[in-house]
Length: 266
Image 1: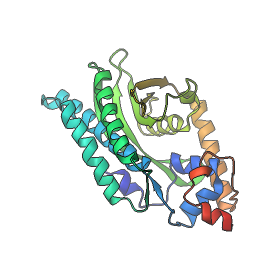
Image 2: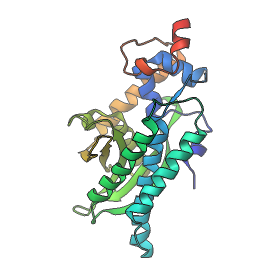
Image 3: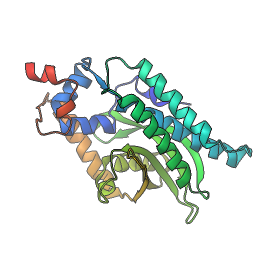
């Protein structure tokens, strides 16, 4: 089975790369064109990866339980998966940036998040697949789009397929954020291109708060949304090929940008 790691070995665009160019095209240049080494990596990266690993493990257990009649994993097992992945990620990350006490505090937060996840699971949820990589062409763009569906489910109420994307966030999302997010458009477009059906899309956001909550935001996409996203990709592609790279000092990326020194030299 082709994995996202396999697809990253060929020239490609991703939603994160597209968003990077939109938010600060100069940061895109440093990271994706020049391939410069960042000055640091935030501890949020291994934290987010660890939560995704635990969440996918829970989803895979539900998938196996539905098809192989095996017992679901326990909360203790899921918490252990998170903790092990978090520590492994920290050990493997170069130039990790973390404030004093932040690692221990995040580990405790992550364990509470996994517990909150367990308490919010829908027993009717029908898991079909997890970590499904895709690669699709974008019209009039030489470079394909790649990505990975965190989870594919079937809505038990209407039978429609649903893409579920796992997120962690410092706080709950505004209600309209899901309607504007490019990821939903890109992933639904890719799924429709392969299976000729437009799925539902769900953001499952677990907050990194003292008392974590799982926020569910459902959204829909249409052919018009796909056309708009493709136009954005073509505009970004044109900017990159035209070597248009401009700093954005008001970007939310700016305050903790790992390419700040390169930007100042630029």
